[in-house]
Image: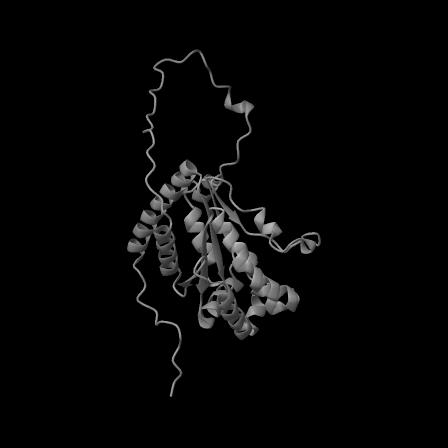
Length: 281
């Protein structure tokens, strides 16, 4: 008898036109969230976690596409330095938390310790146990201080992950996303699964729950995640004055543009691509 998969069967993919229209509608709502946060001084933290190639980065890009980087920041921390390794574990993440009127999107977060650090042996068993014990307390402190904390786990199947890894092999703009750590995750699939399950046992608590995003279909994952995020934030429309463009002066005040020859322009690369139209006649 065939073993049933724990994952739901993929639905039909959303048509591109419907996806683009709904994505733009959700992005318009995200602009309202940005204005609301700035006006009210709200502080929002969104954690994006999941396996490599699960679709976290693509979703973050769609969220931030039309937002101001001065209000909505992306925190994607590199490997800790030797100095940072001696700090309180949460310290380098605390430095990136939002001030009033800011939203921070963590592309991986302090949960590195529950995943890659634990599986790859980059932390001791004692450090791992301490993390599991302290994290709910740490997050409760953030929430009690007024931070809106949202945690999302992007869940991708082993077959889809392998497919995405293979697509990166010969892709010149995405090869950099395929690191030795990524390839190592293929042979440690079950180890990462156990680590994720253990993480949820200790940190999926009522005060700061985890929300699972099924991400085998990237477009569905993006719409589902953004829609849910918006539903959890108590934002409202912020009244603002309508912008009116002034009329241009009818006459100049004597200004004359300097001759073009005095400036250095970039070469017309597009003209070279288009070629000489007269040669095609």
